[in-house]
Length: 438
Image (cartoon, rainbow, N blue to C red):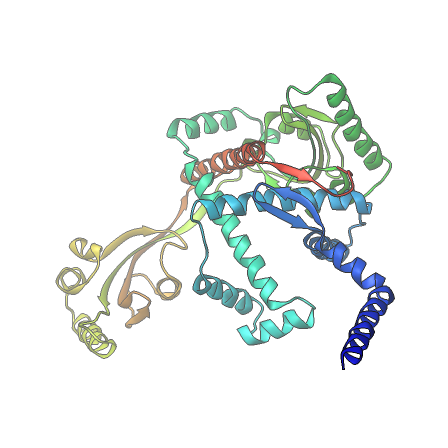
């Protein structure tokens, strides 16, 4: 019996050994997929994470028709982005910023609706594309967290003063028509420390000049951006979209003024590195803004826990009958309207397009002057609407101030975000473990 037992163990050991030596590639793959390529404070990035992101980005670039940069360059770009994302997600977790499953489900429902699919159909579509639904959920969760983190740490802290707006508008008014043009720009950044050693700065400048030479020789800008740029949107071709002079550093604006669409700037030096710009297009930015305004008044009956839909509808129909028999609109509005305008006889003043909800605006725009509408249902309740007059109004000044505020805020937020990421990175411990490539 004992000999039989020992023989059995020996056979099992031999089988295990044979299995091990017969599958070296499987064992190697397991080690490879689990290998750590970077340590980021308390977290890690595995080679599988890196490979998955490279696969996703490669598919996106191929879909856009962008020629892929060399594999090692793409790896570096994507690893740096993964490190920055990991640091932000760790900071979010440490400071209590989370997205629960209910919020996540609502977001995914909206994404599915935008694709004209139910949630179930959307899940099947993802899986048909080889995208695991669980991974997709977590990727969306992380995107929401990153967006909210930026909003909390940067965007919400950006204040724009009235004096900043005044200075902006004064500068704009002193510009010629050409100087007020808007630019569609693509951008390459080779990041360089402001106080780096001469040898380090020369090396980085040479990198930027190599990228410029490739562009001048006809290389695709998106490919060079993916291969050389340290900007956050490097893998998206470096496209910044349409920008006004106020949204760009003066260094950029001065360079763009002398460029025609399709042309590329020289290498530009700023405190945060070396830049190359491509002007994709330009357009005039100082045309007047004339809008159609409507002077309107209404009576509103709201729905509530006390007043049902049927009761509200009966009440508004009764008011409409009284108006049809000559009752005074303003007087009935003061008596019955459940709106802040009631004290003014329901008068909402001059409204611009988009000031009211679509259901209200559609009926208002179709009404002849002085005619009273039939009851109109909106998310707020039941309305009766009367248009008093219409006009066209030049809203250039109001629009200019609003646009100035938005542009100054966007520029400050972009600069603040880059500074915040740099500070986060400076405080972090990052160790590269991918064959000393970086």
